[in-house]
Image (cartoon, rainbow, N blue to C red; front, side, top):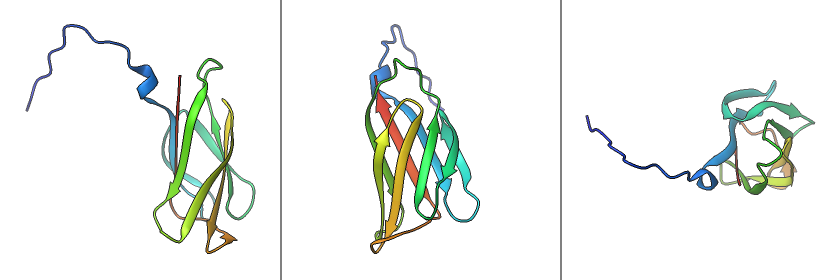
Length: 107
């Protein structure tokens, strides 16, 4: 085991994720793990909204979404401090992926 000793720790908050979620979008949506995401709204096949709990001052600067299969594509449609809207497609058709990953960075 190693020990870490720090004399001064600088706030690097802008380099940390503001919100992230790992969920199963098949059938009834199940959040596997999350940070600052309270729930996922299922708006139909391949249409998901991650409901976030970010403070107003946590401006979201960058968001990415992904799935684990090469044929599946996750696209971020819109972002706010309360929601991240994502669409998942597989070979051009809306698709409920078994694993969807979303991560948001900000101030």
